[in-house]
Length: 472
Image 1 (cartoon, rainbow, N blue to C red):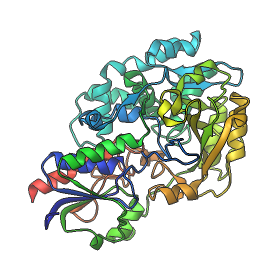
Image 2 (image 1 turned 60 degrees about the vertical axis):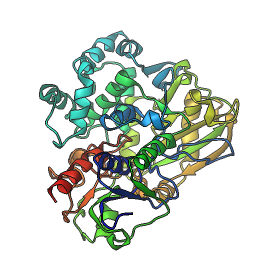
Image 3 (image 1 turned 180 degrees about the vertical axis):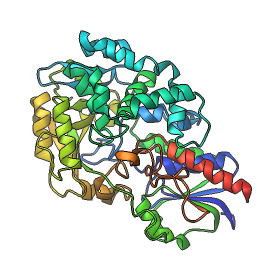
Image 4 (image 1 turned 90 degrees about the vertical axis):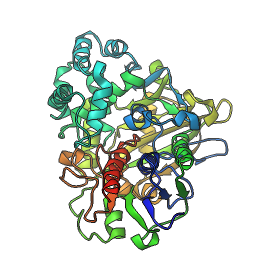
């Protein structure tokens, strides 16, 4: 290691890895430090239940990763990353055995909503899909780390998406479209009536139509491992089992970049109450399952999908979100996001067996057990599900926070994705990656564009870092 590094990155989640890679690609000397024994953060794969069952402790399906301008610019396939696509990106079944689907084509998706809403969906998606790549780059670079490539489309997207999703959903008349779109919004754990929630639903829908909602062959760890291998090839170094408690624990460098929560950064760097106004949101309760066979969904569409949203109606989904986010209680009928990797990747489980996960929203820091409630909800849509369970691994907010220090109170979004904080995080500023110290930067999901495995927070922060490094 040189006597003075150009940059030190703390935290080897997708954003820390991306920031390190972006700096190393530009010829800077970079060292990455991770407290856990492996890289990955929210993109890991582990045997959580039984031998041979490979689970993703956090993120499993990756609509934002395959559409990420940062990842698309990197040769990650050369380092073993392979995207696998289920027949359907996502399905949203209903208790009567029917389902709405988010398919690769707009037409198939619209048809699943029924004749009264098919046209409305096409009109909603139509203006944006042909311009998705420039829109994704512009949207994920906010606040302006680069001039918009297509300011007109970005402005139109803002007019459509910045109002609450409840306003946008008035375009739909029937429950299939309303429920599916409500579920898309709920991926950021914000109540449906919040600011810019319409944009959240639109981004997930457009991502599916553009490139799908794939899974990484072998698990999410493949993405993290590819980033780490590329970093090493670029001359960067990776140090695991290295917990950083203060800046003095790190080697001398011209810049320090933290893929951590604002709370941890303030503690390590001595920033006092600088991020005191930053809010953390609801937690999740997650169950990873080893199954004796596929999930017995009543709806055939759900059996062919990589991701399955579970919520009987938009009203039920809204009630569940309000309970966790505002009422301080676990919902009786939780909205569930579920992923079934072995539908498309048989390497994830022994022959004939399956891995599956489901999570529901709970209040911040909740310490109860939602397992029975989750399984009752699953049985409404997949009768006989419990009979397939060989083993389960549960993780509520305390376990999630112990597993990943950025998930404070079980908040996997690393900060409430509601109100202005959805866009202006971790503070209301045009320079979100900067901190009180000119040589210290933050690049975690607590910065724009926010939660998800896309690396764009790391990409955007790296721009701020290399501008400083070139000046000095």
